[in-house]
Amino acid sequence: MDKDYSTHYIALRKAVEERAGREMKTPNDFVWLMKRLQSQLKQAPSLATLERFWGYAKTPYQPSRWTLNVLSAYVGSKDFEHFCHDGEKEVQSDFLDRQQLSADSLATGALLQLTWSPGRRCVIEHLGKGNFRVVEAVGAKLSQGDTFVCHSFIQGEPLYLSMLRHEGLQPMAYVAGKKEGVRFTEL
View 1 (cartoon, rainbow, N blue to C red):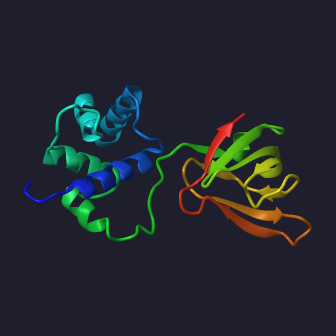
View 2: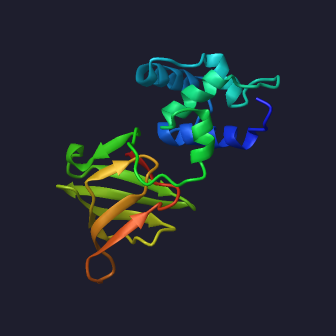
């Protein structure tokens, strides 16, 4: 590869992390990714190769075309060349392979913490049947006591709320984490 692909490598690492729903920071993250690739694509770069591609090596690393093609396939591209070309286009539809939580699986009274950029945090209580109440809100447009309906939470994706009752206004829709997504944690 004669061309400088360094910006494409960065974009590919980010796309893999977005698809995986987690950042690759620890050895356990790379083990998890290697197993995920093997499970989904029936092939995977070695643990050492993944760590080197993410910059966890003391020597310069030039990834093989095969490694780049496998990682590109994981994020939905035919191969690395298509990934580089398609990176300039915005994806309008895609399958989501991220941690999901259905409101149906939550007990009444269950608490979730939601966080999104920049520095927003809410604790919500499940009232049953996908209905929630804001218990605590920091830096968000939502307020304590607001109620809304939400049936699905997807890690790292925008969160869409319906029937939001906020400060005496008519019920409305609301989106949190529109650009970078929302993270959720069961409390």
